[in-house]
Length: 317
Length: 66
Image 1 (cartoon, chains in turn brown, red):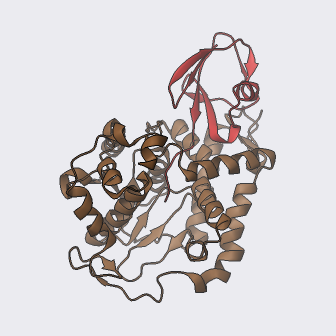
Image 2 (cartoon, chains in turn cyan, blue):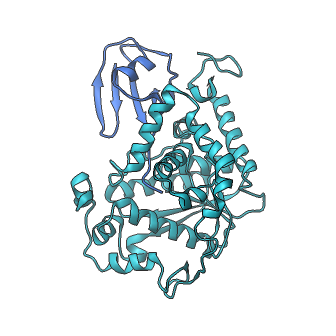
């Protein structure tokens, strides 16, 4: 198997491009895809102050590395979720990445700064783990970006993430969610601009970027995400992709190009009146924002070890 | 060959030689959601793995709901 560009031995095949690449030309392909996403979707300007949400996993470390490689300057933001050893190790990967490259990593701890962690919030709210986790991260990403004076928040959502969410929202025709599933969300109503520069790369490719670049990342899956619906959608799409390479790319990018513009009238939020939360000042439709309600509920609950809220039985409790 | 698998972490002994795509097929692993690594380097799908190789099959799927 030869590299499409130089005919040297390939290290990876990329069926969706009907191409194989050696290491240097694979990295070039990744850079071009990220550059194209940034340009096509007007994600970043040269004078932007960039904050990258970093988990210690492959996608967030890959996009932080790629942005630096492409000449941007960017700080990282790591949120300690308190998911037992998984969080301990993920934090070590994020810190090592930043330290080895002399990059600035902002750190927030749910337990130390807000008095709860994700396992405890899961038990206290009696909802699926990803619910409390996602809400906490979204709120704290926004807050850190606004408070820190950053002009854009970068997340490591890749093509597989976006295709899976699109698949789930399409199966239920969730029009308001579909209308807002865009690679760039402009700043509005006290929320920062948010961009997803990895939307043109699959997660197989972001993992390969890390391996080729020698980036150590947390390979193990979040113990609380096992069996969730989102992972099932990814598996279904990958079964289709294997039979028909390029399907995920066409599904997501054609949606963004052809369908999302038709749905803009359904977007939630553009006509909603928001006021500052009475406790934290974040924009909200009520007097107290959902995050502050979560903090109130979860921080009053006795700490719950992650082992008690993992597994399918625990998810239903 | 020795094959390291993740989630959960385990090790298998598999007869070689065998091509990467055949190994993934035998283990019923989707090529879209796995990479094969030998000596720290990625191995393309038509590459032949020898009986004395030690390889890692690394899953690449991650993430909870957004």
